Image 1: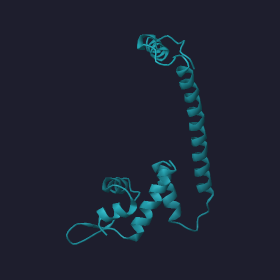
Image 2: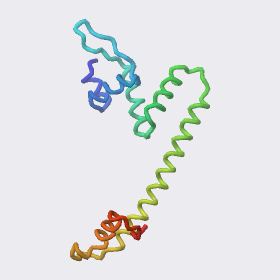
Image 3: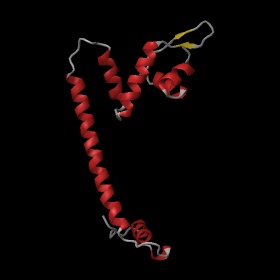
Image 4: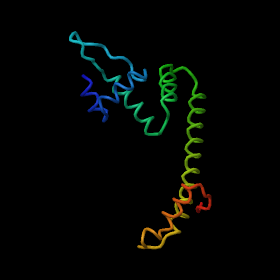
Amino acid sequence: MRIGELARRAGCDVETIRFYERERLLAKPDREPNGYRLYGDAHLKQLRFIRHCRTLDIGLSDVRTLLEISSAPRLGCGEINHLIDRQIARVHDRIESLRTLEAQLLGLRSTCGLDVPSASCGIINNLQRFAAGESNTPS
């Protein structure tokens, strides 16, 4: 199949496929006599694997590691478990950061009543005080 069909079947853009090729995540395809890339089912499977890893927010270097390990089926999965444990820790850290952000936004939101003139808006005033270097904004 050509790159357009591969993109369609994988549900991504052609540029995504080219990017993964440049990053050496996706195996180089054979070339037809006219120079067009010729992809097979193995490329589709590999592309779907990469894209699924990315939906799990696994970084490209870790995707590369997973691909390398998956190409050596006799290797143990200890490194894979460690990789996923690190990803879980990153997600946990992001969740904590998002909770802190939510608390800050809720505090900021509580500084303004409904439908007041913008000159009296507590949110705008707090943001402007912060921008001026004052640190008494709600957190």
